[in-house]
Amino acid sequence: MKQMLTDDRGLDAQGTMRRVNLRRALQLVFQHPGAQTRAGIARATGLTAATASSLVAELIDGRFVVEGAQAASTGGKRATTLSIDNDHHLLLAIIVHRDEAMATLVSLDGVVVDQQRITFAPEQSADALAALAHEWAAPYGDRLLAVSVQLPGATDGRVVLESVQLGWRDEPLAERLEKILDAPVLLVNDVDAEAIAEAAVGPVRPGRQLFVHLGVGVGATMLLDGAIAPGPHARAGEIGHVQVVFGDAAVTCNCGLVGCLESASSIVAMLGDDFTEALPDADAAALAASAPSERLAAGAVALARAIKLLAAMLDPAEVVLGGSAAVLGEPFLALLRRETSYDASGTTDVPVRFSHPQPAPHLGAAQYALTAALGVRWGAMAAHAPL
Image (cartoon, rainbow, N blue to C red):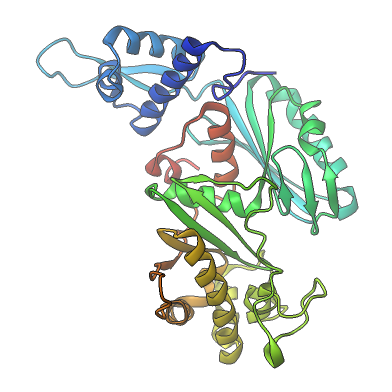
């Protein structure tokens, strides 16, 4: 199996430091493809010109970087620019839903190379994914750098610990697919992937960022300096079935409990059963426009309680609402902001906003695979343009 640039096992201190510097150099090329130079890498990293040139030579030999045109003259010898090598290594992002999956193959610069959608009966989902892996392994197997599988449910990156939608518990999906694909396979929760995509399309904010997904369910995740900050049990962000509504206002949730956050603040709870996550945004927005105002208000109040508690505990720089939250419109956001802005002693008012529109549904999973394999991120412009 291919060794990733993020895997420092078996290396001594000198080898580990060189791996770190390789990732630093590669990140600089990802940030400024077609404009970065060896001299620019040396200046940005503080490394000597000889060391920077040695790192670039290794990246070229590994088919991660290619030389391009000469840079503009600054008075001396014109430097050669560096770009991402998009002709060899590939990333495979597989997005799994209850009865379908979308597989998207992208080059290192984020351009879609191939894409395929499959459908299956829920009870056949694991077998269907294995068959899909067999199909993709034949033409692309030796070029696959990493595979990321995005799915609903709790995962430790290797095993699906629990997925109600897929009917899985303790499913060793990564190991199963790695027996088919000649590449490391990583599993990522769908809310985490959405938060990763949010970080990819906007500037990375230092500190903590709380991301809350609203859709058929409610989930959350925490970003630290633009990267997911998982908990020790792979259950961080499972807030949908925490009870936040009490008394006569509480209703029975699908899980059987009463007063869960999901029973009040999921999009289904606020807009009704006509909403599905496959519904076009325009149609969902029409549902929101005709939804009872008291139901939207109740959802905002319940969500505000959860956000206020989480913000007081975690002190995030901001709270971002993703999923289908934006279809609720600015009036809902204004109401939510009012409900979270009361002066609770010792706390501060945390900004709340909708997430940025995502250029492609596979962006989060693809970025997760890229970072896991090479320790780098696409720049914001690259995340917008090629996908």
